[in-house]
Length: 364
Ligand SMILES: *Cc1c(COP(=O)(O)O)cnc(C)c1O
Image (tube, rainbow, N blue to C red; front, top):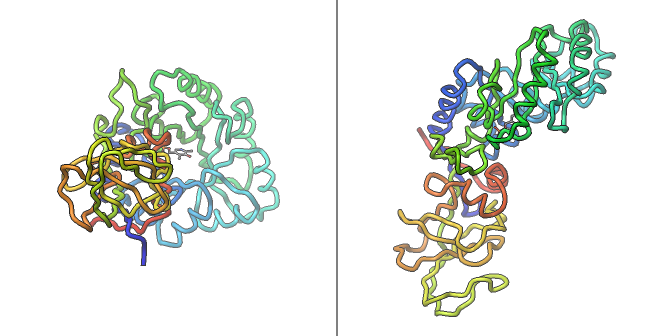
């Protein structure tokens, strides 16, 4: 039996958000990022719901193998690439494309037998300085791959944007320019854009786009006064609702203190509700008093500290009974708002809650 806090996945919203990607990047093929269990939404379920996508991107080979074993036949891209010779053999067998981001990975190719042919994407570091070969080496490495007997001739070129979430940051232009400068003369499919690139930087679109967070109904942008940036502004729909039942309703007196550390003092007599959801369910421990929640068609607020299994909410002037469901985030409460109040991002909320809670896919 699972804990009372639950997640609901909205499949129609996932498909809607894929449509938003298609409209924003009409020339590109779309490869949803479904790494980390599809940002906590359930990798296999999301691959099924988004079967109209043109491919899928995951972080590591085991995720891609899991997709193949579940019968997914789409093109698959593994961003961490191979770590061993066995990885190469497995990827070749399963028809999985690997990112090569380090010259050490090229050495793994040397001991393969002639019949093993690997599909690859060569990743250039244009400024993230995490994974990728230096742009200046791109041509040489590309040519080495082209003439390598174990490499499939359809080599992709890719890079990843570091600051695309900030639409005023010119670093993105620099990255795209550097990518173009060194790859101009090469024949290859190209992929640059994450969600922020798709919605904010059309020069990054190219042959394939790699949306993640926007598919999961959350804004890829920093809040900005100059650009509409919220999920609603962008026409995205919530794909994950985290909800939990009320398990107690109490009347407190003016001056009563709530929760660990007694950080909330009731300013008047109050009615409060205790909700069976806490940081063990993926609700952020750093959510402050005042963080919005939704109950019975009304917005309310968190009172006091988040504990492991429980939170306390304000029920003064709100009709509710034991068992009434409280939405922590979802259609009514924007996860980006909860995340920013908690000094994190929706990506992290989704991954944590998704790993903690039983998930149901809403029938569509
Ligand atoms: C996770 C990831 C993406 C998707 O990023 P979002 O910001 O969620 O759209 C795209 N490309 C790479 C290389 C990634 O690791």
